[in-house]
Length: 222
Image (cartoon, rainbow, N blue to C red):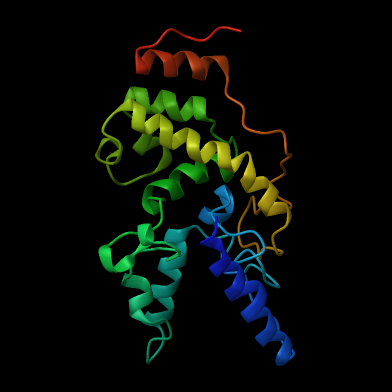
């Protein structure tokens, strides 16, 4: 998209040029939530020498910022960068002055993505959908809110689930392969501990059958 030209200019051109002029490097500031689904601009803010935060979920980055401010005098992280609506600010749809931001609901998606990435027995969409149908998804993934407050019906829940799973197993992998090395701080860091291949997203027959049941459709056979 044309709006991503901004992200490529500020990283691959401006930051790279300034870093080179002073004999230094610049970092990639992607977090693990963004890295999971490729919510970053290829050849833009995906660039950098090392990804220092990419093994921390978005909520953990906020917690780290709050901790650094608590032990520093004066605070080292501007409070405005913590309070502002998370946004790439690349289009009118992401205008923070209008309380518009990223399409990710970080407190929820951090937990959902962690079930795919970090659990020893990684969860699948089939399990996520079954837990949703049974009304225990929030409990299972450790989300402190109510899932039905985010998604009023099964249609919107499934659309969101498949949107991010498709990216995680699709374009997200292609971007992670080209990303800077990630500073690992826990198990299943992208790049080595989390092994993956570019085979594309897959859904089980059990998932498709449950999806059809929840949406009131006939199951797809074959």
